[in-house]
Image 1 (cartoon, protein in one colour):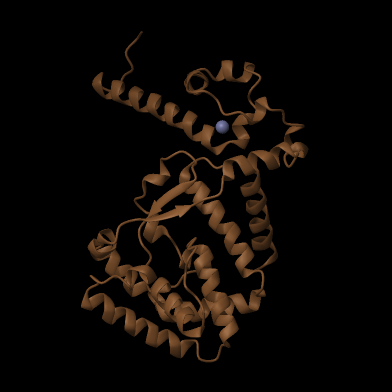
Image 2 (cartoon, protein in one colour; image 1 turned 90 degrees about the vertical axis):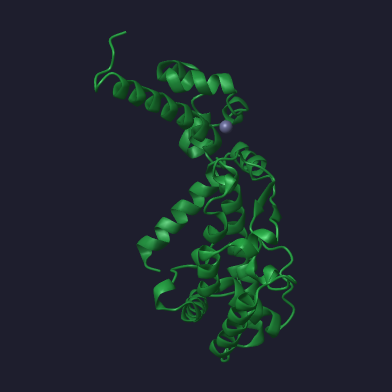
Length: 281
Ligand SMILES: [Zn+2]
């Protein structure tokens, strides 16, 4: 990682700690990033890039990923998720992980064969790494996937976990036909109250240098009425005495943006209706 990358990473990391999550998916992302930071702390940058390279060899040239958060990407799991539009919360439903699905009695022969091949290939790739490293890497994967019960106890289970959850071929299988994953039912992931935690850290003054001291009012979400009001009356928003909440709260930003978009769409519909010109009120 060069100096600029490092700076950007640090910058977005501190932003992440400063802005209240806007949606349920934000909560999930923030939580898993925090778990990943903890799980990767026992490795240095060199070790991490060797691991990444090894996992990318399993995935193949066309499916390489630049980082662990992308490699163990719940994009496969969150692409069409309701959580993108849901408010911050404490639980999220995600599709079952490959490592969990592999133990289901109804799994197809095609899945089983693919899984075995991936495990065998990864076992060879991992040959030169000691047990401790492989187990640590598997725990990093579990952190990225927010898997509380990954069942990683030894080298064998760690290899299995990594191979199944990093596999690009199983990802392709899922993209082509996700019936198996759907029939396993969703995976319920519990999240800490990030919204509250972040509010607490803001209250402790994390943002003071930027915004001056924040009061209770600055940390209180707008009511639905206020959201609508501010979306349509920027002037009133500026006069409201509650402007400081907007930059710190992704949730309220989303809510206001939704109304602004709604208004814009309505305007466009009207323009189309009146042949390209806005009617004179
Ligand atoms: Zn808010």
